Image 1 (cartoon, rainbow, N blue to C red):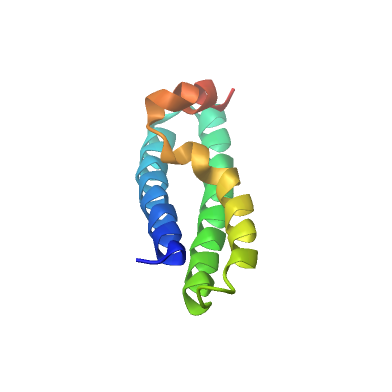
Image 2 (image 1 turned 30 degrees about the horizontal axis):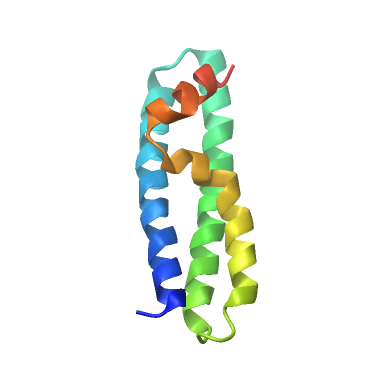
Length: 101
């Protein structure tokens, strides 16, 4: 396995974790009070948008050769930084920033 493929697999695995935790966040939004629910839904929308961007960039990454993918890696990492907190387990994130304040 080359470096690009290993990197792509790592980010894909982390995206799976983020997606699973996003589903937990959606479930919590369903049972939250109205004020907190609005905060959850705003957070969910941002996460879903960034998740889609990372997926799109990973797909493009697969189209690049081993020697030319490095410039796209920085774009992937920048967007991933916006959502990687959600790849952690809920206990690791201070319970979704203490119910989004």
